[in-house]
Length: 546
Image (tube, rainbow, N blue to C red; front, side, top):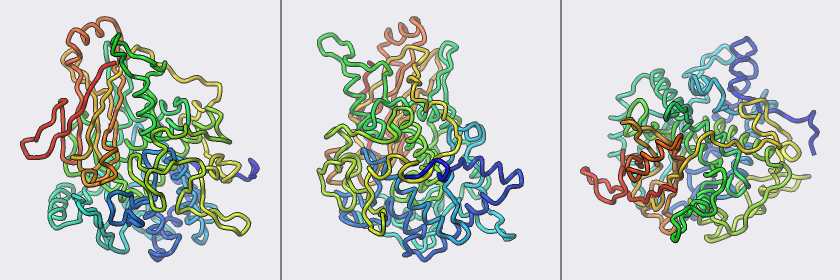
């Protein structure tokens, strides 16, 4: 056990930035030194950034190396191991940073994505500035990108695009594209990126996109209603149990069960008082797509077609340094949820619930058999824990209490005030209906995509929310995925007064619209199934108002 006084502290990166600007440069400089160090280690060194970054997705290994029935990365998404696997992952990365000479005290900071700075200016500049002065020498900022030391080859049959990356490939973020697996993709990427030659201007575009995702809202009858990712982070802290808090698969099932219409009465049955459960993985996904390559549709401009940054795909997300600062904040949200709900020393999983099987969402990771149940005792490969000289694989039971078991805690950050155990879940100030979107077939959709809901009030199209879906490029060819292709999404439809409700019902909710946007642009704007004029397969879905 670790006493409170011995705890190491993960601080907000924004605070390190403020210290640096005030003249206390050492904390940020040491962080840069540590990152520079692990990126310069030989690629096969167990503490090199390439080795650790590659644990998440590519380079694939195990059955998923060339078999689309499996996931070739170790990361867990869409299942109950999502929070704990990434918690252990951050510790392994942190230990590597601390192994660099002079960096023994370096802790991984969190990008406080709901802080006022992030919501007014975007990403903290240490993650985006092109160069940094370290020990009197100007160096490429080690936090803005990563240059691959060797080739990564995509061996999955049927992948389109091919997600291979050559030696010396440098990771990119919105608005750029990083698809370089074939000559056709190289030509398209070069043509796209040629439109964005100015690095500093690209950072401005990226930050504008981040601000759109973090701050979107609508005004209905004078009522300001938050529809943004920052609100999703707040809402996820209200999730009633770990299973549905932990991942999108479990939360979608929970929401579907509680938003079902009784065929005899036409009324919703078994409806929870807080309407829709938001899992931690939902705002997590949104930030991935905001950094990696999608606009919020309907805000400022249309999505920049052709943007395919590495953070937007699980294949290479772990090889962009910003991934770890984002996930550090996601882990902080996990800790806040634990403190609020009294689960700092234990977690509970609803046995055999959707989201507790290896085939849910992404497919089995290396070492797991298909159709295996996931529990708190499931190994969190490939992470090893050394206890009294004996090494074994981490499990979720080893990383429940970050203070007692792992020896660290989090410094002050936004939303801390919501973690008080006695604090009840926030209720909406207005009544709402629920838009249930189901039967979304992700098979024809290439890579990650977004499901967005809109309502037209007084002639104005208002954006109600967006659900980001991190998806494999090759779902259409994934044998395992064929039985797990349905995507669901739930949105609140605010009803601020009886007049608005009457106008919605009188029109049979025809002024409510759902759009699906992917790497190929707008894939569907109506519940239909057909080919677009350019031959891209549209995707179908079912929409219900409950």
